[in-house]
Image (cartoon, rainbow, N blue to C red; front, top):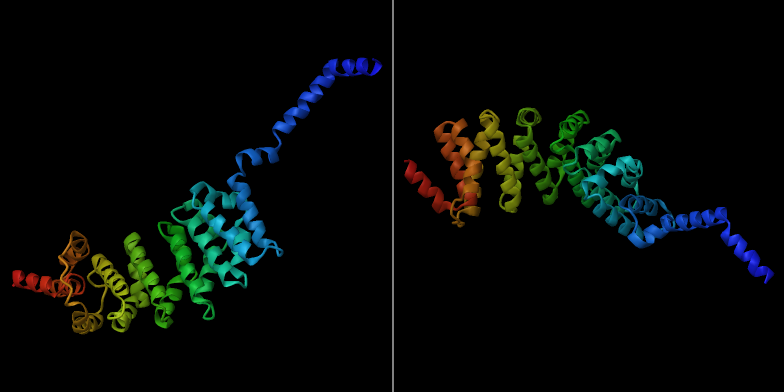
Length: 326
C-alpha cells in the first residue's frame, strides 16, 4: 500500500509529468529513429560514401560501390551543389591520386557528373583546383587510358557552357594538352572524345575557340587523323568533318591553302570507303552543309559539299547534286 501511494504521488507531480513528456519528445525526434523510418538524407549518404572510400578498412569492392552510389546522388543538381556546402570536394579530388585504377576512374565519373550543366558545381570544382588536376592526368604519359577517357568526360563537363572554366582551361594550357594527345594517342575512343569536345567548344564560343585552335594547328592534326583513321572508324571521321564544318562556318579562312590541298587529296580515299553508301540526304546533313555555301567560293563549296555527301550519303546522291548544279 505504501509503495502504491508513493507511485501515485510521483506520477501526479506536474514537473515529473513534464519531464516524462520531454523524454518522449526526444525519443520521437531522435535522428537515428528518423533515419530508420524515413531513410538517411542525401547529405548523410554523400558523407558516408566519402568516408567509406577514405577508410583504409573498407574493401575495394565496397569503395567502388560507395563511389557508384555517390555518382548517382550527385546526378541531382542540388546534391551536386551540396558537395561544396558539405566541404567534400577536397576529399573527392584526393581520390584522383589513389593507386587503384577503378577508384580513380569512378572518382572522375563522380566529378564529371557533378559539374555537368551546373555552374555552381563547375565554379567550386575549378576553384578547388579540379581543372588543373584533370589536365595533369591527361598529360601523364603513364596514366591508364580508361582513366584518361573518363578525365575527358570530366573536363568536358567542367568547361562546357561555363566561360570562367574555359578561360581557366586556356590559362592552364588545356589546348596544348589536348592537341598533344591528338598527336601521340592511338586510342580511337580518346581521339573521338577530344575532337567532339573541340567541336562543342567551337559551337559554344566560336570567336575565342576558333582563333585558339587555328593558332595551335588543330586543322593539320585533324587532317593527319583523317588520313590515318578515315577508313577505319566512321564515327571518328564524322566528328572530324563536323569539326571542319564548324570551323568553316565561323570563318572561310579557317584552313590554309596547304590544308585545303591535303583535304582534297584525301577525297579519293574516303570516296573508295564510302561510295557504296546510298542513304538519302536528310535535314540533319543539310544543317551541317548549308553554312559552307555562305562562306566559300561556290566551286569550293560544291567540292566540300560533295566530300560530305560521298562520305555520309553515298556517291549516287553526290553525283545527282553535281548534275543538278552543272
